[in-house]
Length: 477
Image 1: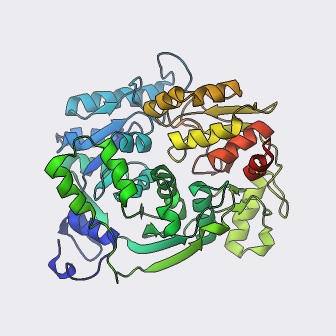
Image 2: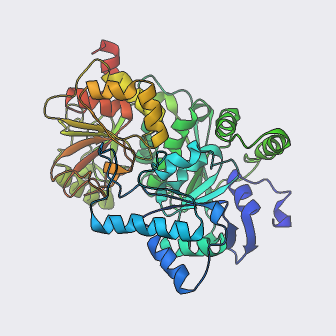
């Protein structure tokens, strides 16, 4: 740790970088030690190939964990078989490489298999103060527990496998304070969509964002996962929340190995994981949670979003760069400026992804659909984030609520979040989705994605249109 920084007030981000810096390479770059490296089947093959070409071994196999999640089918077959030849090869290559190097793997038919960003926290792999990396941009999720998580590229995956370190360009600090309380019917998904809409899809580019404030403190840990997961959609290189008592209780419940003197030492160290008074942030934003409404995207970027009571903006009201993007988005989504999103018919509903496929998300959705049925002409599916979530939802009766309402209850996986598997939407199908990206073709070539919370997606499923879930709750529809 650089001695000159020890008496200077530091942000949480700076503390995490300093504590993991093996060597400073230059003014902007450090050699960063990585506590945990998560892998999936589609970003690791070239990295392993490069390792083998140089006859290198994995430096710390036990600090690497692999999951098959992106290309896996999620249908209800008792034994999952990946029929696509290229995808099957990715999965078999991952299994072979993990076996050769002694890396733990949640394979295709592992009962605890799931999406990496759901599996890792629920198995106690994520602990405050860690640096966690993965060949997936939504690794920012782990900031909810005070861990610095971020995505890396294939060449960097190879470097980490060989050295358990990473050449890392340091980021700038941004603080986003959210005070007040979220109104009934709104969630952390609505909050982060609102923030992205306000600061833009590049508003946090080059920054690690620290969320704080009374509204953040009131969020459950799972809601914080959602918040940090989607910070990358504002361009953030990381997202952090200082671990409080709620976060520590979550971690200790998932980590039975942390007991006795080890727990005492851990709690002492974790208490230091917060920005010092007087620490400087390069940019600061403040928001009032009490003003948040349910939010829904109208375009092809997460920042093209409006509150459910709002209207789709007119491109003429935007600057020239945003205008071109908005015009193209409206052509793609077949929507008209100046009109409300509420009431827009949908043909598909997808509840899942690393953003919103945890047990709290499924509880929220089930509370809306209980006693109702999916609207005529709508196909609705629920894909739990992991085998553990699936089992818990079935034990709580949530799965049966979904099935009785006409939803498809499927096996864990990334599924229709990114259409790298069997779950693909057809051209022109409009989907209410709990995922994190609404890019052109994201859920299928020509498919149209509207991002929203699980409760909002559930409301769309039973009404057949984009609906303000708050009106359903008030009228007991």
